[in-house]
Image 1 (cartoon, rainbow, N blue to C red):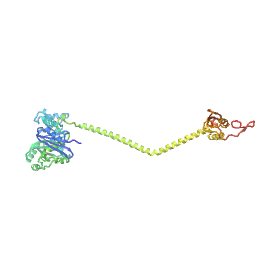
Image 2 (cartoon, rainbow, N blue to C red):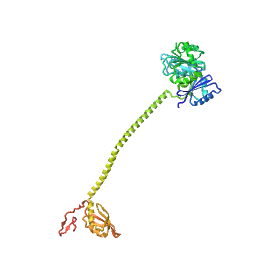
Image 3 (cartoon, rainbow, N blue to C red):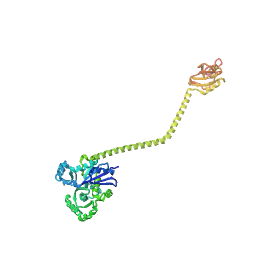
Image 4 (cartoon, one colour):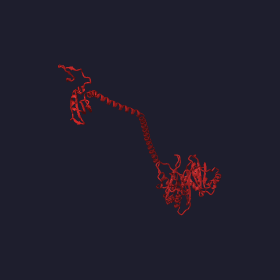
Length: 469
């Protein structure tokens, strides 16, 4: 939440407080003369929930000297020191006990430099600071209260000479404005509208005016005095052209305290760093300078650009990854189909390699099985049959295992038939394991069809290996 902006107007032994606590929300109260003014002020602030934040303090115009001073134009001079020297002629207190601030007024290069200086005595500054210290609060600004009235004006005002008369506590503060620019101010005593009109005419030479474009009146009994003042001056005297947001706030001020209440509201609505601030430097809250603000803004813009660039880069990468992911999902069924075809092709290649290896090895498994089926007796049966390029190994049972050796020797495909382990007796059967080699090298194993037999010189029939049949 935005902290409240609290304006305090000090006049005589009274304190008028106006606090802006939100949009169209105003807290207003008056602390009359009390034995312990600081403690009473602190209690009132706590009661209204205003126990935090700095206070903006406005002094009565009669406590300050406001003077427009002309200085020679020179480069590289300390303007503040020149003003301090010149103020010795205008203030009724010692120069070393003077607290002042100044602003430069508009002027052409051919004219002397014009400044508006506000000066007050040191103890005049110390009193409100002591009051705030007793209330355990810190000051934000210390200004002349009537100078803050310009903060209530509309932003776009024509460049016209205007005099703003503001009545409070039986006196009138006169502000001399060029548009929104404050040229100087005075406080005058006026018992009636005619006397106020006379004081306004006497004040015109202070700003070197022969007349004025506008006269405004505000404060105590302003509605009743406007008619008489207009008749005395011979010009219309309306209310000041307040900015729109302040119309409802001004209407909230009590009718019996319009003058002091409006000054407290103006102090609260003023800028954080007013142009004419009498608060000592060590007591002022830290506010960034123009150069610091420019540097901070440059750093912020640079950081924002860096973050934006990084964000754009991240967004581009995310979009690219999204497109790649969508493309992967689109191609995923086709990729799985290709993987399935690759696996099927691998299996077929392995089968083909096995068939090729069997063909290259010339291991004729089916013819060999058929021959064994025809050769082995009915009382023999095989448990396992292993064929490779070197030969064949048979494991099984038979009624008489030894009769199997000659039968297998007689085969046209086998030779060197022998038992690879002792024959054992099992359930009226003999357990055997026989190993036989191919009759010729494995790459020359004959097909199932054998060549035509030939006759030997003795008239015997010979097989393909020269054996007698």
